Length: 307
Image (tube, rainbow, N blue to C red):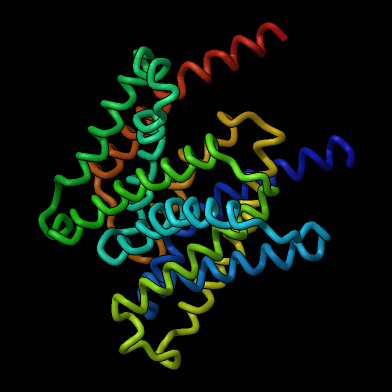
C-alpha cells in the first residue's frame, strides 16, 4: 500500500470513529421507539458478534477458544458492553441523546480513579487531579436546570450512565492487565456474543418479552438496530487499526468530537433542545479531559521537536 493510500485509509478510519460513534446515540433513540432496551442491546451485540465470527472464518483465523479465554471474555463483555454501552442504551429512555453523550465524556475520569497500578503516577499529577475535579463539576452541572428536563427519571438516567462508565473502565483495565491469549477480533466477537446472550436473558426476566410483538416493531427501529450492529463493528475495527497507526492521544480525540455529532443529530432530527448550561457543561468536561491528558500532550510535542 502506498503512503498516499495509507493516509486516505487513516482519514476514513478517523471519520468512522468520529461520525459512526457520534451517531450511535441518535440511532439508539430510534431503536428504542419500538424495541425494549435490553432486547435492543441483545439483538445489537449478537449480530455484531456473529458478523465478526463470519469475518474471522473467511480470514481463516477462526480457532476454538479454551474455557479460560471464554470465561475471561464473558466477564469483560459483561462489564464493557452490558454495563458500559448498555447503561447508555437503557438511560436514553429518559435522557436526551446529546446529554447522554456529554456524560459519556467523563469516562477518562474513571480510568484515572480506578487504575490502581498507576495511582502513584496519577494522583501526584497536578493537572490530572485538577482535570478530575473540573470534569466532575461539569457532570454535576447537568443535574441543574429546567424542571421540565430534570426529573427523577432524568437523574436516574444520568446516574446509570455514570455507573456504566465505571463498568467500562473496569472492563478495559481488567482486559489490559489480565489479557487473553486470543487475537483481538476473536476476543471482541466473544465479548459481543456473551453480552448479547446476557442482555436477552435480562430482557426475558425483566418481562420485556411479555408484550413484545415483532409485527409492531417499526422499520426504522429495525434499520437502526442493523446500523448499530454493523456500523458499530466497522467503527470498532477502524479504532483497533488506528491505534496501530497513530498515537492513543490522537485516536482519543473522538472523545471531543462524538458529543458534538450527537448533540447536532439530536437537535436536527429528534427535536431535542440544547441550552447554554448543557453546552457549558460539555466544555467544562472536555477541558477536564484535556488536563488529564496534558502530560501526554506535552510529551508528544517535546518528542516532535526533538525529531
